[in-house]
Image 1 (cartoon, helix red, strand yellow):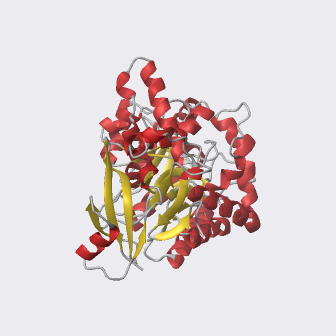
Image 2 (cartoon, one colour):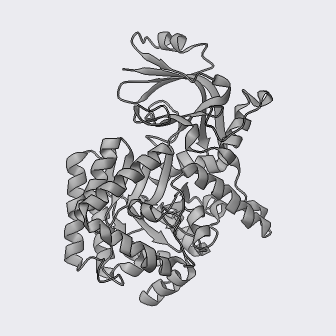
Length: 447
């Protein structure tokens, strides 16, 4: 049935424009926003204005401390690494991969391990308001296909990437040859096409793990496949200084890390580049020219001592930027927490003498929603509450019994301040209802 949602709506119209509006939003039975009536006296009045006779109404019980916010977009998360969240030891990136990550991912050869882990990470990210996730899986076809099945069943938008890695990888965990990588990659694409032929909810995404772990032939083939089938690409770039040095030694013909990917056609307007901590000016300009997006992963970059991404520097050059939890380099599956970390990392950059790096609350909430949608090429479909877009929405309640946020009487109804308190103090306990594509999928009142 069509539904009219009534209350306060908070969403981004642009990088620095966070709109707070009192409205009635009409959503049809297909999950598409049909009308937005600002300052409507009631849901029924807005429905009558648009000729609706059969519909339900959803509104928070406490209008003064509740609001709707778009679903979060996680532009970079390793679903297979979820069991290792919070495990870093004393390692940095490359040691961490060999010590913690590759042994865990190898265990996904067992479909039971894949099903158990992927079920939990999908439930957890949905519980934190993630409507869209760009997932890295493992090299395994069956396990990766299970991830796609589970995301579709749960109702989460997802990009499903089988990791391609045929060089400088452990003997026990890698693609055995170029041919086996090609066969396995096509098998996952075929599976996703079978379960969601138009890629409406689930889409395959080509996933060369990073330049160190991919042969030149494999990267060239993936670049060609991306062009032939218009597929998105996700990979890592310039996360760690040793990683950069190793990459350039392996590819002496290239003048930069980004140049390696560009050589093989992997920098496109559908590419998601994770981290981008140490890009040069020239690399930033190349990434912008190619229309790539960057997944900013502040929690991971801090936890693994990788560095501080200059987000405003990227945005100022026209680079699309969203947020990534980077589980399990990142220690939380929460995009809200990641937005908090993005704001704080930007202030650390500012404390080094460059005030221009500071991000505002409006900007990090943009990164969490509309910015992430732009990175994923979905900004025509999700990211805010505009007519024609899909109803991906969180209903946030700040004054509930279990809320970690204390609201005082004089703060009730001041939604700009409430949003700030939510950003800095809120968590999944504030998410009461959560819809993706118009379908109720999670929340503390989910049933």
